[in-house]
Image 1 (cartoon, rainbow, N blue to C red):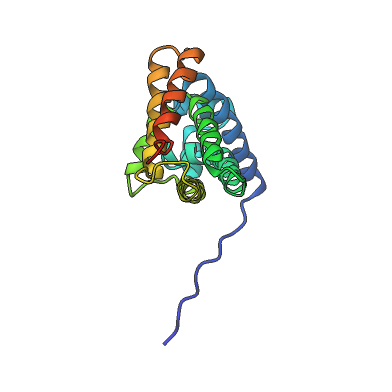
Image 2 (cartoon, one colour):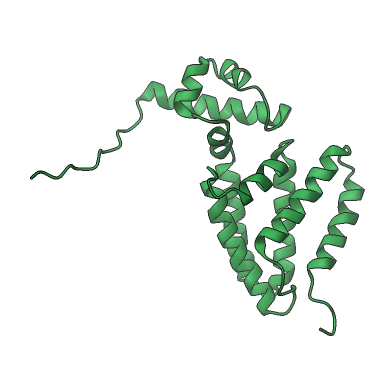
Length: 195
């Protein structure tokens, strides 16, 4: 009886690697201009490749979006880890949520995409899971310090931030309104005085 060996992943050919990198660069530009529902044909055109090449590298829109956003999610994950070690983790959590809002506002439609992927157990956003795990540790530390309500989950906090970004996106994105609403959100997350 023979046992099959797992197939080794072959390194990407040089031309395939170039196409992959051109697709990522084009996608970042097109998504910033047109939002998360941007035309994939436009991404392929700007990268100088056919749509088939795009789909060989990224079989779904979510896979392309995940690849484009991976670095930002890794940055947010690192930031959550750093802020969890600060003397005031509640203030750190609010700083992290502000960073998350800036990230979600970068591409039109990203806030709603992130909210959908938070509740979908089949999500393709693997790097989102690492970011949320790190942020969850930050939240837990902030709750243990008494600075953040104990009945708030990470999913609650991220949903609130993304809902705020989404609502501002729909209304034209007034920065002053964002500041007011973020202050209300932050006040709601803080542990009630005297509780």
